[in-house]
Amino acid sequence: MKRINNITAGFLLLAAIILSGTSCREEICETVSNPGEKEVTIHLALPADLKAAPGSTYLSEVAERAITGVTVLAFVKDASTTGQGKFYFRDSYAGTNIDQSLINGTEAPAAFKVKLKPYFSSDQRLVILANYAPPATITVGMELGEALEKMTVDETNGGWDDTRLVLPMAAVTGPISIPIEAETATIGALGGLITSPIQMIRMLARINVTLGSNVDTDKFELESACIYNRKTKGFVSYKALDSEYWDGSGTVKKAWVPSGTNVLTPTKSYGITGANAIERSIYTFEAGGVTGVANKKDATAIIVGGKYEGVSGFYRVDIAADGKPSAGAYGEILRNHSYNIVIQKVEHAGAPDAESAFYGVVSVTASVSVWDLINAPVVIDNNQLKISKTQLRYDGVGTKSRSVTVTVSDGVAWTASTSTVWITNSSGTGADASTGTREIGSGTGAGSLAFKVNACSSGTRNGTITVTAGNITKTINVFQYGKAAVILSSNTGKGTAVGAKTFTVSHMAPWSAVTTTTVPTGWLLWTTGATYTNPTGVYSYSTATSTTATFYKSTTVTTPSSINIKFSCIPDSTGDMEFDDINTTLSW
Image 1 (tube, rainbow, N blue to C red):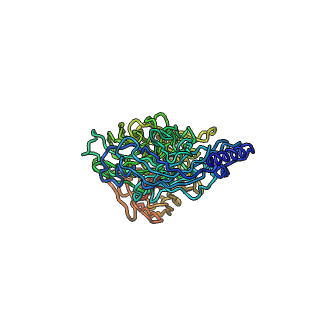
Image 2 (image 1 turned 30 degrees about the vertical axis):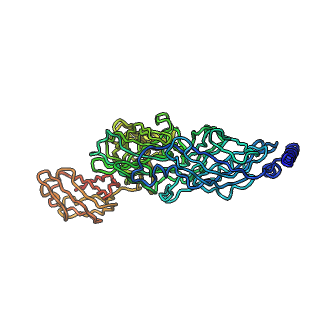
Image 3 (image 1 turned 120 degrees about the vertical axis):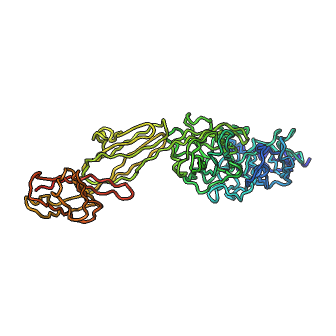
């Protein structure tokens, strides 16, 4: 009778709280008190057996599924008006008697015991955490969704640290009512409160890279892999309360990513773990995808390093959840998924560095499977955009046509445009006044971009040309001086007299001069540094750093009355400085 009275009293207290309309986020746990903790055995379904030898990697098949510790967080339902049927944190329990004797089995391969409090007439939702200790910031009365956002893991050493020998896992149960009368109970077993094992979900994704059987290993050798635009933090649990992210039965539908976790440049490179294979060593947090080719620079991508015909290079691999990058979805990485990249064909040397590969033009996809070994072909195409010069400097004359070489893969189209008004196409047409920009060149495959720069009479100025091929964009920076490369003093000669004439030469770089009209033998001599080629009648004066140039007229004959001379500055060793020639006339 005493037990019945206690139960009746519990009903009355609960009814009083509900009728009063108050929330029992904390109070419910006191007013509908339990008659003591009950021993509950919870059966877990661990993520799928990979059925593959671990090789020389740091995590074996067993380690990927191992449980070294379990914590259970209990969230109790508040059915009051203000509680709106949500679940609020009340208790934390440590699991004991962890049994993984069936780790290589197919049904309920793990189980553990935990003592739970059966709150009277109140459903609970359990958050089961393996290999992870929840933070102290989860406090009594915190709503379930808010608590899940508190549970995160940060990367160390530029990625998932090799010294972490187990993978965090989580599961969130549906509402459970723990029976008061029974001394023990089971969850996740036939006849239990939930009749099927609780599905544990790894918080990480795994990436494998291997070569297909049709790859000629005499030509291509796999060397490394890294992750561009990786995430540095992840949520331990999936977003269990949102059907957009979780289907409620074991499948993650969308990446759930903490804000402010993006790092572009990788700091960790993964080497091979076997012959032309990188397996069970690349683990990473979830990453959200992007839509559209133009946004691929913001997607998470895998950069594969390999040696093609003895030359090391890098290739970008894009992960598309639907396996169809042309559909416009790139880079989404989901927890508990194994992304198995199988290289089927390599026909070119890779990009010179990982960054160039990331920004390269690619049409590469990776097969996706839920942590198993189902593979689909992946073809690596080495499509790139290269510009022969990306830093250009010019003098202010502005009469010479300019060009750079554009190199992309066969069949890839490219365009060049500018919004700088003094940079024009090869015909001299500049930016469109209505749009502020103009396409100044285009092509398919390798080609030359020809353009001009207008004259500049004072100061200095900067401009840019943008070259785009697919999703890659490169910028050519253009700098122009406000004066000519070579400035000469008066060009008046010696008339009919025999003798020397000296020019003052102001120059930006070492200069040379050459006569451009035929000079009869003996009519004109350079005083120093001259080379005379007969019978063509050409005098040249080269690589001069002097501020003067002296010419000598050796005859009184006045026909012809003048000689044309071309002055040129010599580009520096970097080749990024180009000068206009200065043509002058030496008159007698």
